Length: 193
Image (cartoon, rainbow, N blue to C red):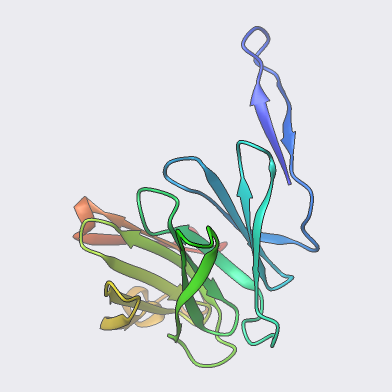
């Protein structure tokens, strides 16, 4: 994984940093809001948390029983680098929190939000209201309230293909807008929004 930095004089980009340690394609990246960590998730079924200051892997989060499948999306739930959330190719959403005692991320919750083998395609978090919005490979759009203990409470569920009449379009990305009052959803390779 490489990052580029723009040179001030000529406007060209040069290699700024290269992080090594992944094995396979990376599907998602997310910087912690305080820029202390970078999380990556990929086809190897692992989330890697990188310490930006020392340019090394801080922790590898994996499932030894291989229940997760690929990591499809990653995001941070707090304004600090304490809580990470990720979606999987097998319809799971997991929340991990950094403990002060061990200074490691530990599982808080694992929730099957979709049928087995229906990937979570995209996620966004509304920090002001504690809500998680997600999309699936088959067109589901779901909204959850995240409780303090990590429990996901379903608020509503819609089908993208019925709303947009966009049959076969995968809703790849979702973002809260208007201070969490609306969500914008983008269809993969279709231009549908």
